[in-house]
Length: 225
Image 1 (cartoon, helix red, strand yellow):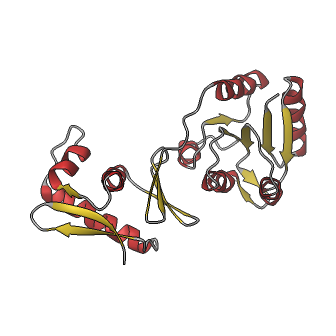
Image 2: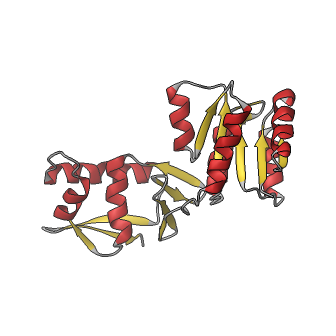
């Protein structure tokens, strides 16, 4: 029997979802607030799949989803919410969700999406660790302690190249090849992105690494002394 964690503050909707899931032979644990959800998970609650509402009395489901991923939870997460605008949907996936169901929804659709998530073998989070930092490739973020730093595509590609070859020279040519996607990239473009990346890491309190220039060759990622 698969277990499902439900975060839904509306007692009518929550009860209806719980009954429907139990009719499908799922074990359901239901939390009605962000505080209650965190308390249950922190106390050792573990489920095969998580269904999260966004609008909560003491926060939002995005925050809880991000928190779950920070705990390196790999199980599928589905948002079930009345927020239907594109920005909200995109944010849901950016925070680490596997699916997004818009309210109002049909019970059949919800069950089908749940079964789809539980039947698929989800890849584990692709992690690269260096100097106390964790690059989460699947989510395109850098974990610094309890903080997650979002990276744009080029920042992510550059940092991945460094994390894959720490304390080794990565040439500008290698970075250009990595960044190119149907567009022409120049040395000065790479240098500009490196500069922006350094500033972003500094602004977000990353102190464990440094990106050093190697004259005439490229760059090298090293542990900060």
